[in-house]
Image 1 (spheres, helix red, strand yellow):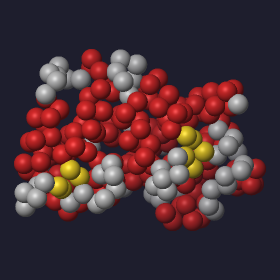
Image 2 (cartoon, helix red, strand yellow):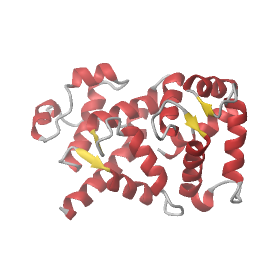
Image 3 (tube, helix red, strand yellow):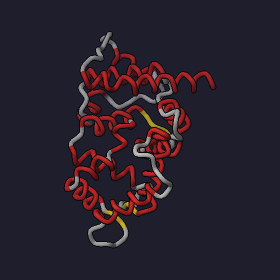
Image 4 (cartoon, helix red, strand yellow):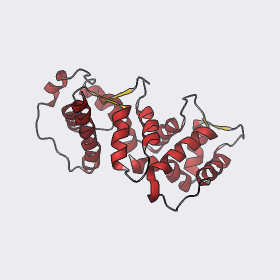
Length: 225
């Protein structure tokens, strides 16, 4: 069991590292029989045609991604422990555990404690190739920790602190303990238009579209994906 978990961790790491190659067009498919292999795992994803319709990936790209996901993680699912381990490897100078927890929950749309291939590629499709609004909506859901349709100060503070903790000593500029809270206060002043103490999705999207610096700050996760 431990060996399988370790192999899955290594496999998903390889898969994440290959994403930029896929997007740049330097990752190629080396076989044509991937669809036949789709029936050989426990958690078989939906048909390629359906996933192609739901994402911005081509059928060939989905086959490549599925090959890597299936070959290295035969169970067909990634759990939170594995996800945290992956981020710990990518960010050794900080503590990535909380950010990985929140990001995992954003991918785990069914809230069942695991990420299947469909969950993975649908999320990646938005992050890598979605429209600006789609990316901002996904970001909103990341910050909406309790999934009540609003972002409150506590939720935004949790995510911002998690990002700073993950970046560790490479956070620039060097931060004092109260800086994350100051950033949250500044964000809320601009986003919470009606001053009711929470930010709706529309308030979030409008504020980000109106302020390029805010948009870059709120979408920082794209640089640590």
